[in-house]
Image 1 (tube, rainbow, N blue to C red):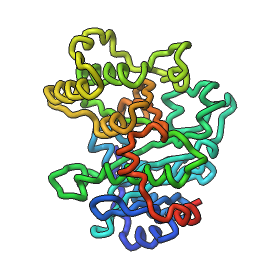
Image 2: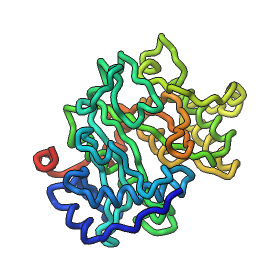
Image 3: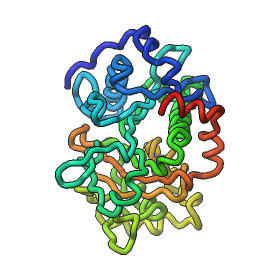
Image 4: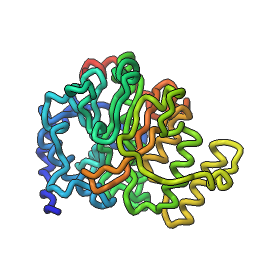
Length: 325
């Protein structure tokens, strides 16, 4: 495990987070969101790499390198961008997402997309021919540890919510071109094994099986290369005896808390974002501290109306597109 680099000077960060890269203000807590890449903001990328490695090590993952940056971050040929959550008062980066548009993705000699998720998932020909080109792939989401505790005030309480304001901004920005988010939700090795089984039973019940089923179109979109093995989950049919998602969700939350844990925040947020979310199972990421990565797909049109009202409302949508597209 190598030592993490020192913080990047705030003046350098501010010099790169300029108005032409501004996406939107957050709905709460007075933070700001920007869209940059390594070409226009190399110092911001360096700080993102530092903060990602800190956050991921703190959770039990990470690369073990001084910064968490790879070719997808650094090589402009891959056309990845960074969604950056910025605290203008403390003059620091709170968190972010890395993303790429499906119609910008490059392919290998086998016809598979060259993506961070390609290490864990195989994309089926059906998916690649149809919805993939209208999909934004999300990866490397993080919140710096100081902003993860709700005890640290509004900035921390709304940090994840602020990031989803950013995703709402991306939906508006690429409206008409993109229709889906595909992403990986990370579950760290310290998560209780029985809690993991319950969580995946719940995902299977309400968001589609991760098993290969030729009769199910959604199950044939994305397939884990080496799916995690959890054994039989039938015993949880008696545990989750609620009449609907909301009743079973209360059970899931209670049972996992009884194990001394909580539903992983990003998984929890995705589950409550859209009733039509699709889960494709998960695999072990042996390049990232053996964390478990669960694949999910969300269609913009299926996001709950109250979530759209919360995260997608933006003034001057046309001005936004002129600046950032």
